[in-house]
Image (cartoon, rainbow, N blue to C red; front, side, top):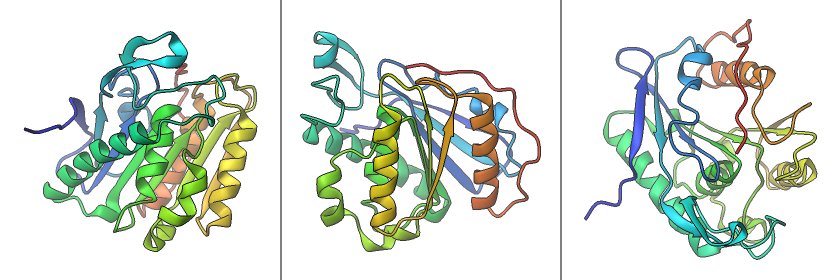
Length: 235
């Protein structure tokens, strides 16, 4: 029986040669970031995939059932980590990667993106692929299971570029934790582009402009010169 996640797909042009699998944050769903398909205005046709996380009880929220990639046991998000849940989420995302590859998208043209909890899963998954992906967008997030990453990350994934962005006033995932995660990845040999913004746990218009420019470079296109006014996401 298939475990494929429910998801929304948006193609910005005919015969896309790039895919971006975008993972939402805790308690949201795949529709939360769907507007970026129009707002980024990339100069290349892209297939965006916006999956829905499974429904599960979340300990830190009093056991309330909601869409979550894994359980969170403590407000200190990098403690008492749900290793089994994170690895299960990895398997679900890998099914989506395989689906894109089966549809003719080369794996080095498949990107993982994610906000908050979704960004943690994107990072965790990308570092464990047998073939390097096109890149990772890790927004307002951190590197989960950091202590085991050095032993589990596959050497070929050092070729996967990483864009990390964080709000300086983030009360949910402290900016300092995001920065430590980026430094850890740099120490492991990854290429990490780090950005900070004057915001809390959200995505801002300036950040969307930087994402568009980064994706334009990674897809081999001319960098965007304009910036979307964008909107804010808070999850």
